[in-house]
Image (cartoon, rainbow, N blue to C red; front, side, top):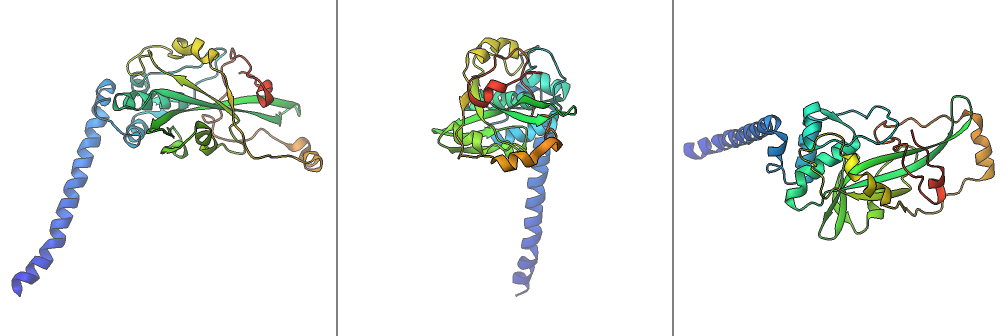
Length: 259
């Protein structure tokens, strides 16, 4: 009886020891990943969740400064050396970490055009875009992005469904394009990687997203009046496209404007 009582008391202690040992092992693993060279991380990471975890720890979110021409796309090594990046840098880092595990290295660029009254009460149209790593596995699509709500395992049969799943404050994404990163050194490349895909980017057509009909009545439109202000939101998830980008056609994309 005493032996049974002793075993009952010992079991929770053993469970605690095992739990602590597991926690120590995970802590040691994270410590190694934090000190690991970016190029060496590629062999250590195999899932989108692991990629998101290490990128979040080593790359602070920071939008690109306003520029007059092309956007600035950084490699995994550059982002981790600078310790900051925006949505496309995050997506490139995810693609770099997962490419050797069978995840295609492709960026999904989504965009929309917002119409609002500026500070001078002039009607203004402005284009916004966002980037995520497009995940594909067994014929299904998902995403891995800088926003936690941009991260979901492949579960959709079409890319349109992925785009409709990506949130946007006070609006929705209306069109997208997919940019393959084949032939680009997304792990250790130096300089602006966008220059290597600029022609590919321009040659890739925007694809419109279909949503259920959403009409604004004349009375409602009249009530909006002059008090409408530019929507507040995530500066990275609502980033303007390069100024030299060809205005996409048709529909709302006719009003696309650059920086």
